[in-house]
Length: 309
Ligand code: PGA
Image (cartoon, rainbow, N blue to C red; front, side, top):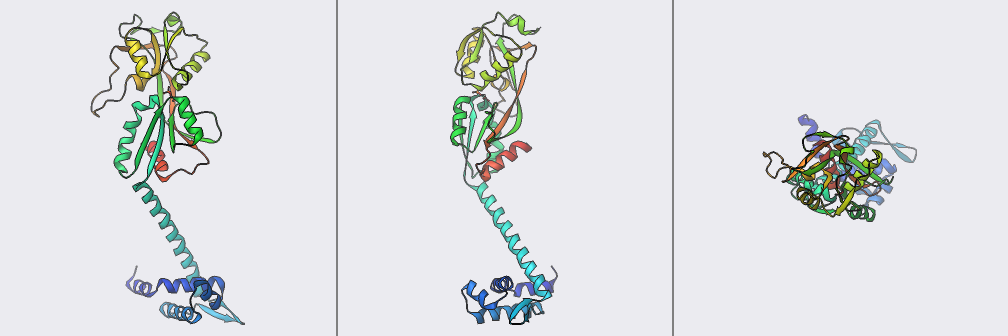
C-alpha cells in the first residue's frame, strides 16, 4: 500500500466507518445515531471527520433527505467488502481453533483396527490438540452406533443402504482365502470347486467380513461347508493356523502393516494365502457419516486427510 494511502487509512477509525455504514444504509443521520445508541452530533462529527480524511463529501442533500455522493457510493461498497472480508476471517479463525482443540469420535469395524491407528498417526501429529476417541466393534454394532448418531465418523467396508448416509471411499480392502501353511493346495492355482470339501471357518453373524464373503459366494453360486463361526479375526487366524479349517479374511487382518515403518509386512504365523479363482475379492473401506449432521471441523479435516493422503 503506498505511504499516503496507508496514512489516510490509519486516520480512519472503526467508529467513523460504523457511523458511515449505518447512515449510508438508513440514509438518515438521526436513524443511524439511534441504531448505534449514540447522539446525532456524535454521528455528524464522525461523518465530517471521515469526509475530511477522504477529501470528498460522502452525502449530499436531496429535498429533506440525504443521499450518497459518488465517492460515498464507492466507500459504502468498500465498507461492505471489508465487512465480508472480516466475516471470512472470523470463519477461518473458528476453523483454526476447531482444529486446535476438540474431539473427534471415530467408530470402526473390527477389521479396521489393523490400519486405522496407523492412519491416525500423521493426523494426530499435525493436530496435537484434537482428542481422538476410537471405538472398535463388529459391523452390526457399528451400524447401531451410526443409527444413534453417536460418532462423528464411521470407518467400515459395507455401509448400510441408507440415502441419509454420505460415504467417501478411501482405500481398497482385498479379502483373501487363507489356510494353514502346510495345506496341500498351497502354492497352486485352484478353483473354488477344489475347496468344496474343505471345512470353512467364518466370522460371526453380524460381521461385515462374513456378509461380504456370503455375498461373494452367493454371486458365484458356491456353498461353502461352514463348520465353525468365530467372533474375531484373531480367533479365525489361530484356528486356521491350527489346521481346523480354511477361511476368508481381509488381507490387512492377515498381513497387518508393520509396527516399524521400515519393516516389511509379514503374514500371520502358520498361515498361507491360497491362490483361488475369484480371489482376492476386492471391497473398499469408506468413511461414513450422516448427511444431515453438520460435520465438525475436525471431522472435515480428517475426511480431507483421508482423501489426499
Ligand atoms: P467386521 O466388519 O470387522 O465386523 O467383519 C468389516 C466391515 O463391516 O467393514
